[in-house]
Image (cartoon, rainbow, N blue to C red; front, side, top):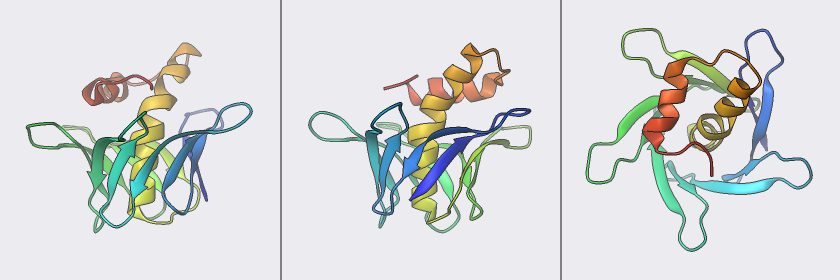
Length: 151
């Protein structure tokens, strides 16, 4: 099991959730953790939990850790990358990629990509901004590109 942390400059990193060895992703809440999605470890596809069939969110290239958001009827959008040391980066077009957080125990690119799509981009950024921490607009725009700001 790997714990997922959101980077907060000048503050301790915030625990967002965890990814189990079987590819199940949980959001950390007071009390019981909430299962929010899963990862197909063989294909790198990431799914958000729904009543009924789970929603396909995107995938990771299992060779180099590049993470893509699924765009229906279009080309998938490149969001960023995950690295073998567990670090996650959000892609910037003209600037260096932004460091967003990490997975404390790297299991595979698929595990890290599930954490990136399901936890970091959805649950990490809004609460930080509400606490008065400076969150770059590019990070918030990444959530808009995903079409969601929470589940």
